[in-house]
Image (cartoon, rainbow over all chains, first blue to last red; front, side, top):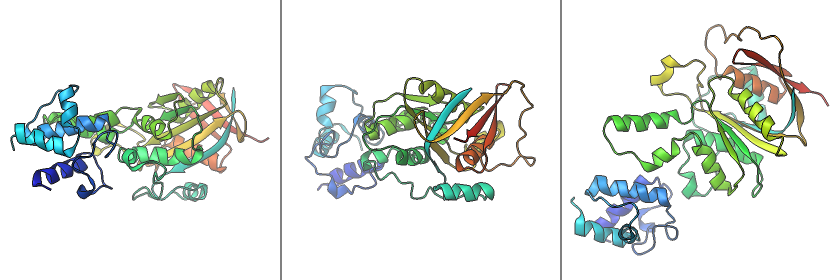
Length: 86
Length: 249
């Protein structure tokens, strides 16, 4: 697991108050929303805000592209590697 | 004149949960401190539970034991201040020019707790949120009496947490600890009560001489009636006086 993947998982746990979940339990290629980690729409907004704060990435709230970026930890990591400033 | 029955009730505060706890405390009020006890929300999934703050834990911790799983019941959620500590933290964030947390914003609205409760129980029955400076419990009873005309039972939850220190100078009778009183009002079963408006309005009830009260005097009076320590209490609202009396059947 790359340090970026781990960093993203920890960011999600901290931002979303997922106290009962350890970073290792979040699987890189599993869905984050509805299935897999079972996050909801408010969590999506919260992650969007965290990405903006930490990596300077701004996303449109309701575009198909954003949906794809939010699919899994892997896709979020790709997004940050291509656009993020750290 | 309004007649109704209290089918069941549960009150929650740090260290106070059973009817016996409250009965003892009301007769010998002590300073209430510490965390909310075992009023944990085990029936609620961890993914939803993380959204509950102290206010929500308290309110739902009192309400959940009164309802059966899968049962539909309309509800009234009454809080004078709602989640003011959360609202203040959001305002402070705005003051520092920080972007606002969407979760924080969604949970700061007055009907947030009732919303979480209805999501957790998958109950789509009507929910009413009440906020009142004066006579919070009386307003809840009046609203519930109205709803009893169309519904056999109504769940009522009265709840508040202490205000942040910043507001203390602007507010009388603030809660000194988190508390919630949940009860089911019914026309079918339970102890009988009668609510009457007094013909002559009397002077406003004096808050205790020292100005110190552990809990809102209205909440104290209502708990005394629920526990059976008293059989009658008075409410003041908009210059009118009301009486709630236990009716022996």
